[in-house]
Length: 294
Image (cartoon, rainbow, N blue to C red):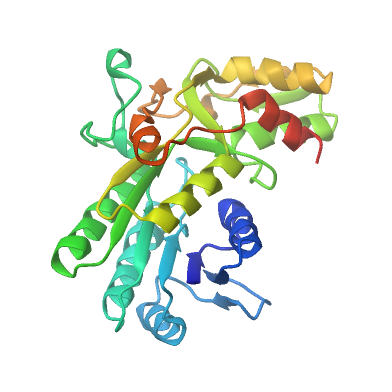
């Protein structure tokens, strides 16, 4: 099978490519820069370039990972251009191919917004109501993709990943930021609100379920990709320090505390369990040990 990964050189894309190639799939990619013959240097906001590339490759399956992927992105115009217009360009190009590829849209748990803790873990049927531009961009991409599914018969599955981490993640994100500070033997670190609760999982489990979805492809479905377990960020900080025999003096920075802070975000994964008999293979301690041993 010919597979195309957008954002192939990114954190998840790199690990996904390795896993797919190990299974024998023919993998191609789109990314902003490339010196790899199988990775095409295409800006997904360039409609003509995206269309030409998809015509040339005619993939059987598309993993759409390319995005600005952090909540605090400081340029909303660029965020919407990549996450919304870029997605629109890919969907349009895919829908015009002689054989329309199956399309996995990677959305985000941020589409749910602020959810009362009494109704968590959050089920896929819960209404989406984003409270930041990143979540809004992903919600818009979902709506656009659903229209292509209904009007253009584009085979579609949407996944809403919750927080995930692993080797190679940008230190902009909290777990690699803490680990980077420890490796650099820093004595202090500036962090935001450590009382918030997030559902974290291992990127290897994320990649595993993405591939399972591709291989069975329950068309039209939406799935949370999560562990179902909420971790307080302060507890994760303590666990990292214990595993690494280190200590950091934490200074809370008001600039790192978000407006419209989501205090808890934990996903219900019963749909994945029912459909794929699946659950994550790695607990958080295992994941942190893997990162720390790099």
